[in-house]
Image 1: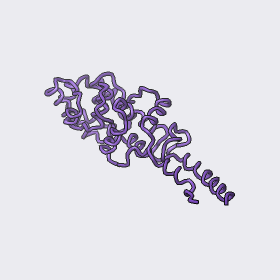
Image 2: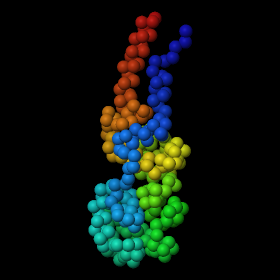
Image 3: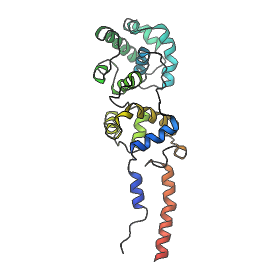
Image 4: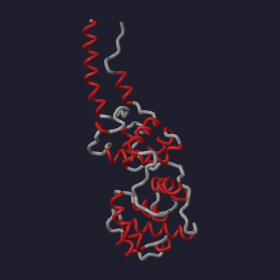
Length: 244
């Protein structure tokens, strides 16, 4: 009689990525069906500025800087014609603030002269602006216009996607391509925010908390699955020994 090595099929199943629809449904139960960025803003210009400043910074860092910034610079024209040193000083609480100040002023000038002061509605146009990559462009489109042209992949989103085996790449652009194939287009705008919520809450970089994670039963990287696998394996060994 041929026997299968105990626990092998279960281990193989646990290594596979769960369906994206199951992941999203469980995350919605925990974090809500309409998650949004935590960057504070009141209009499209403030959203654009806040998202442009967000790379390599936490939302909290950006939110501490933007109230004073928004009070000083009321519209894109104000950023476009700002004194660079004064603008840099306003952003000094952020990482790479000098570069971000240059990008912000240049992008605002382009928006004022080429787009009549309006924020574009396509990734192609947005990514032509200084300091705007696909992640920034996707957040602007998703949050500002409810347009699903792509998926914003930040460090939290990338980490969760890899742990779920929805992507095995370390490159944000490749992770986005993998997610676009597996997530329904209607969910593109929400999946990033849901992954970010999970990444901040339980699926942390240094100390993931699988025992209280809403995905613990379906995540192939869950520590809780690993701890349950050993007793199951021992039980199968005992049953095989009794049969012998």
